[in-house]
Image (tube, rainbow, N blue to C red; front, side):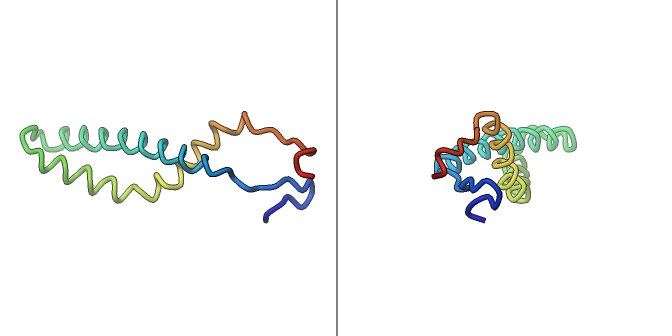
Length: 92
C-alpha cells in the first residue's frame, strides 16, 4: 500500500534510510567476521594460516549476507522508530 487505508499516512521511506542500513550491515559484518575468526581459532588452533581465516570469513559472510541484508534494516527501524511520529497535517 502507498497510504494507510485508515489514516492515509504515506508509507514512503526516505532515501537516507537505505544508506544508514548499509552502515548497520557493515557493522554487523565486522562483528560476524570477528566471530568467524574466533570460531576458526578455537576449532583449529591454527594461528599461522591467514588463508584459512580469510576463506572462513569470506565464506561465512557470503552465507550469512541474506540475513544481514534483512536484519540491518530491522535494527535500523528499531533505532529510528522512537523518532518517527505521525503528523496528520503533513499528509494533506
